[in-house]
Length: 305
Image (cartoon, rainbow, N blue to C red; front, side, top):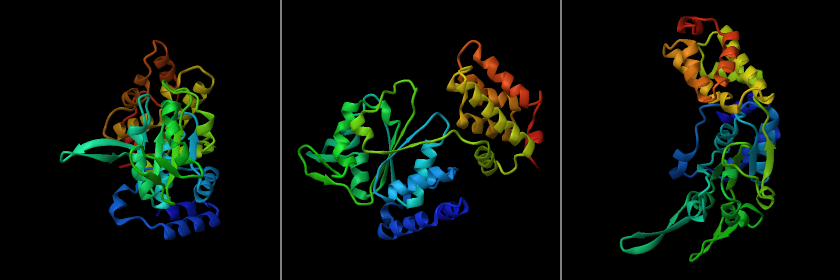
């Protein structure tokens, strides 16, 4: 199904053929099929797709960088699904260390055993490891992965053996500049990734996303929601409002609330407006919403029967 989607997006046929060859060489292990993601959303963007597929086929790791609401996690999940690989997701934070990634010793039946972490399991079983918000972890903690991420594809587990990564294994990292708690990425770490800068979602892609997610959504309100998001994006770029309002997940959640029967302005308050705790910013966000949404916009105005 995902390969059919790539064909419909007119992705380079040679790259699609490369994926088929990869999947033939590395079939999904039966005991890990539950870990192969089934994406809820599709990522739209032909150029980004081709860059990401080419890098992964060449055995490189990917770093997906870009501003908020560009679909970094959606693309990572889509890539694991396209290649038919089990996925391990590792959410990074300030206290992340080697034991949280590779594993640690534990007691079992009165004996010390090694309990493998997500990165260890991903490397051994040939999965796709997603490092979510990689720049939230300390660079010192990430140094333990350097040998695993470069040409060596190995890592020494203290007290145990040398881990050799499976040939099918790939790592995909995501990062967001400007989030609280983030830091500059170490050059030694960044050099081990092919970096893709994801562009903001286009009006056309946003419209397709809403059509896919809400098939009964009428054309006029769909265009209005797209325009609200793009207007908020422009205000963020011009520093008129903070990025808290630029929340695509919040927009989708708000439309789900409208589908459940909540009035449009109340739903958008819950999904977008109330996420800003500034004294004046919510008023600016509501001005954008009021520009495109009439005063009393109910379910019957938004969705077809």
